[in-house]
Length: 117
Image (tube, rainbow, N blue to C red; front, side, top):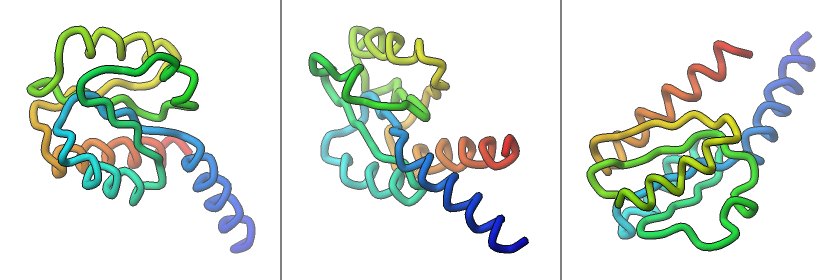
């Protein structure tokens, strides 16, 4: 029985590794800190501070969560992200561009995933 639980947890971990968290806005100088927080939860990070490069929709892969830091994002960039949310990825709006705000949002998302599993 324990072996089955481990393999299920490992499968969930691999599934999460294939997903990306998109952080829109925020501070470019904080990108490495954002990455650390996201990777601790098993996801990869795509951070777009000023604009979304062409082809980003295809390069993002499976999107687990879109985080928009509303105090540090342009309207045009925010609108571009709604196109990526069309795949059903949840969108979270944060008032702060801090690492702790991002950490809280990711912990809440991870808790929702655990309840659903």
